[in-house]
Image (cartoon, rainbow, N blue to C red; front, side, top):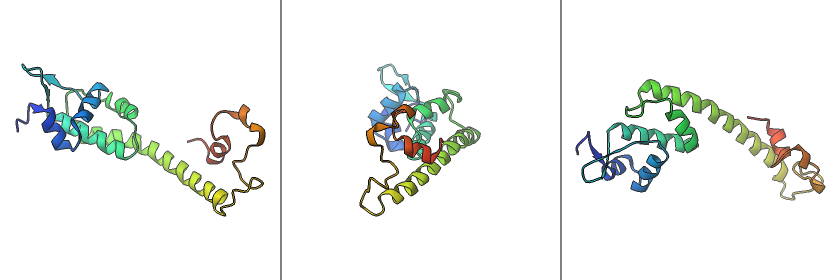
Length: 150
């Protein structure tokens, strides 16, 4: 395997992703390639590290837009360093901790609501007769208020 001039198939195999995923990531500006004389994509080795970071971030629930924002601070044609990863992961860690807190509160709140199985409208904390909460905003207003804003 030519480590300086990797084909899309080589990168896909090495990273455990579909070729279409690499095309998608490239279309989103997350990775970059060059073209050889036959107009085939060729990737430098730094792409393997970038794809690995993308996969790890996605497993943590980080969206592609958030990944793109984080990658904007990195050099385009250089593998992210340990320090780069520390910076990226620190930012994502704060976001993920907020999501975890929100989900834990939501879980606990819903357990009290549906734990008995009756869904009693008299006791249900998300019951909203005549949509009285419309003026407070869209979505599950009562649940959002109960869970705070993260």
